[in-house]
Image (cartoon, rainbow, N blue to C red; front, side, top):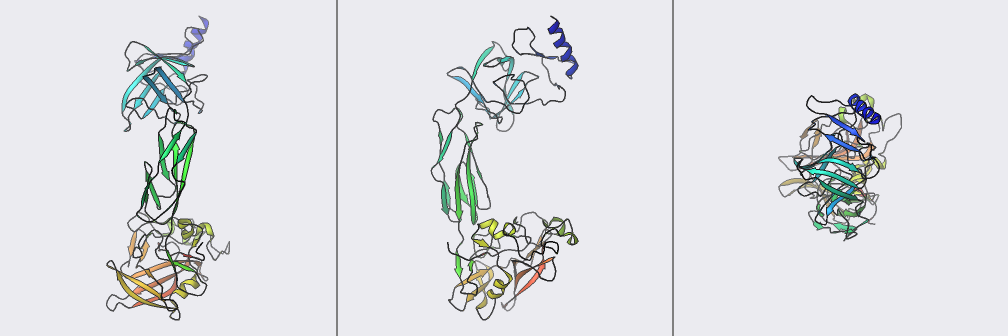
Length: 432
C-alpha cells in the first residue's frame, strides 16, 4: 500500500493533467507488471519527455532510450502484424503507427497520415500485450516475438551502362523467403543522372549514379546498382590531345544548354530552376566580392581543385573542365573553322577541326545573373577551370556571339565574374 501511494504521489507531481483525464503509470498492483490506466486522456507530459515512440518488446517497453526493438505481434496465424523501428507497420489498412505510452495507445495511420485504427493498451510487458482494439471489448492478448528480419537483398543487376532516355526495371529478391516484412525502398544518389521508382531506373542525364534498394524492417540491409551514362566525345586533333564532349553538363542533346554553374561550384541549375547567381549566394565567399574564401591571394590557387570541378563531379573522374589554353585552341583559326549551324531550331556554333574534319556544336547558352538568363539566343559562354590571372573575382571562359543578321560567329576567351551562372563543356584525356 505504501508503494502504491508513493507511485500515485509521484505521478500527480510529474504529469500535466487535463481537467477531464487522469493518467497513472507504474506497477499499480505490485505484481511486477507495468500497468497503464487510461481514462480518456487527451494530453500528457512527463518532465518534457516525448509523447511518441516506437514499441519496445524487451525490458521496460515504456522506456525512452532511442533504441527501440521491432515487434512481431500475433494472436493467431491469421491475426498478426509487425511494428517496425522506423515507425512503419503492415497492420491492415495502415502504413505507419504512433505509440503514445502515457496515454496507453497505439494509433495506426494510412499513407496520408490519417488515423485508421487504434489499440488501447491495458497491459504491456515483455512478450505480451493486452489491449482493446478501437476501444472496444472484449480484450485481446497479442504475443510478441522478434520478427524474422531481412538478411540479404539480391538485385538482378549490379552495374548498368545506359543511354539517355533509357529505362531498366531492376528486380530485387529479398531473403530469407520467410522474412516478416519484405517491403523495400529505392533511391538514387544522383537524380540528375538517373531516377528510380519501384525499381524502374530512368536515365535523365550523363554521369554516374548509385541506385540503392533498402530493407525497411530495421535490419539495415541494402543492395546497390551502379549506373553509368557516358557522353560521347570526339577528337578534334588539337594541341594537347584532349577529347571534347558532344554535350554540355546537364544536357542530353548537343543543342541543349544544360545546367548553369557558378565557377568552382559543383551544384548546377537548369534554365528555369530557381536560384540566384550573385555574390550573396556564391559558394566561395562570405556574401560579397571582397570576402572570397578560396582561390584567392590567401591560398594562391589558380586552377580548380578536382573536388570543385563541376565536370568531374557530374560525370566522373575521366572528365574535367577545359583549361583556358584548351579553349583558345578550340577557336584558333589555325586549327578549326567556326560557323553557325541550325539544329532543331537552335542556332549553334559549329567548330570543325581542320586536321580531321571532326566537329562539335556549342549551343547559345547565354549567362545567368540573379535569377535571369540573358542573351541565350545568340550568346554562348563556357567556363574554363582557371581563375583569371589578374583578378581573383574573375575566371576565364570562352564566349561566342552569333550575329542575328549575318549569322557570322565571333569568339574569344575572356573573363567573367565567378558568381555568374555559365555552362560547361567537359573534356577528357583518355578513352579508358
